[in-house]
Amino acid sequence: MKTIVSELRSAIAVTLILAVVCCGLYPLLVFGLGQLLFPAKANGSLIVDSQGNVKGSRLLGQQFAADKYFHSRPSAAGNGYDSTSSGGSNLGPTSQKLRDSVAQNIADYRSQNGLATNAPVPADAITASGSGLDPHISPENADLQAIRVAKARGLELEKIRALIAEHTDRAGLGFLGEPGVNVLELNLALDAAPPAAATNRVARF
Image 1 (spheres, helix red, strand yellow):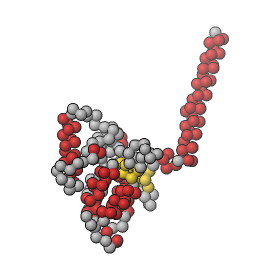
Image 2 (cartoon, rainbow, N blue to C red):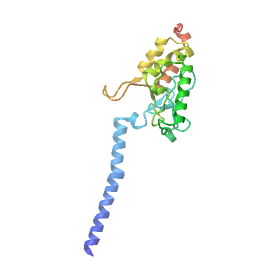
Image 3 (cartoon, helix red, strand yellow):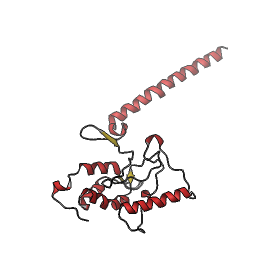
């Protein structure tokens, strides 16, 4: 009986110690180090304007529809880029619904960007990501949208392409993954750019 009580006491003590260390001290240590060493990343990589207003996170995509903005890749998360409903469409390659959706996305993309009816279209322009919240598009996708955005804003195409290059995230360590253009950051940079009238320059295409 004494052995059982002794083992039970030890088990309870170990459980309490582990609870304090693993559920209290360790999370506080990680939180503190994150706030000290990587405050921006630890708080969600938020994008804040000069007035202190949060515009979003550089890790989460947003939906854009106007011609003056670069458009994000399609999203199957809720009604599109719904962070409370992250996920893909879960439609397989034999799905007629998926084939119809892709065909419609191809037609829409070509129409929106003034492309020929047989022009190649980047895969990320017509298919949704697994999370539905991907903040990036491929550089090829951005370049095909550049003329539309330049015309809508009355800016030179070279200026638009320079902003694309500025907001392109390179592959990690130079070889992990593919380069990607952060759509939210790029569109915010476009909104902050001087209007065409202020530069006394005429857009050329």
